[in-house]
Image (cartoon, rainbow, N blue to C red):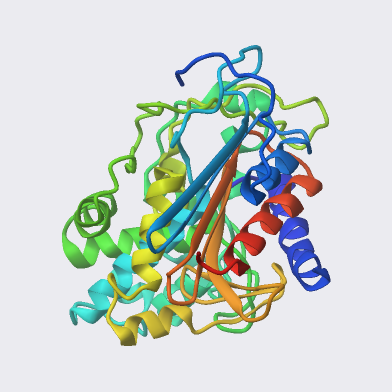
Length: 384
């Protein structure tokens, strides 16, 4: 979740993805790049060569696991990126939120066709916004027309805003209220536009349906059952506990990696981008999800039934993007970004092969291409 400059970069990166595919913190001092010939290390090195501070990736398939890293845990240090380090997964959080919603649907406690007004009376109202015409499905698929609240968050938009408000706590109601100041992008169901506000509302609905917070539902339904020991829902706590590399954000400028933005109260991204995790945990989650261990077949089918997302140049389901593979077919996954941590996570359609890569600075268009190329090539490889 980033602001206008970041959103434009997101769209460029995701649009470039289709063209690319179709055309084809502790530890000892870091040493020179190892002379390895395995493809994953070469692909990680290629990402680092685009100008990122640090890179880490992990790929899994039945009985196998491979990982690679490059760069350092921070500028001015020779410490390597920690193995299985923790980072903010940004919008990959949306897959977790959509999974919880679909579990509640399977339990008969709510429906995808329920309106926002039904669960949150009076919350989506004003300036042409009307929660009685917006369904839960439209929230999860970004077809509600509700504006993205990201541009309203100073900490996400400039270095000064970050310094002033990195420890500010937001309530979901406050965030939605900011989005309601603006007219909708389009009438519900009549377009597609990526909006973090949709998933903030989804988190609020989870709370209303279950009687427990979004964070607690994610912990009890997903994190604990899957044994995701490096994954957390930090709420307003601004620090990353455990091994991690520092994050850097340039805020749309060309001034190097930019300031250190590792400390952040991520309450502005509840349900939409606030989870902290590891590459290993994300691989476990997406393998379990696509492998049918978290959702009943009917709900997994709902999640993976996609429609065109013109802004992104891919198809989008419910908290999952469907992305073409250069070797034929497609995979499911999600991109994530929250102030200096950028990740790509993907899994084959049956969850038997997964790939996660993240970097610890904004990077460039070349960085995005190299990241998507890594996921594509790794998911195209046959298990051996």
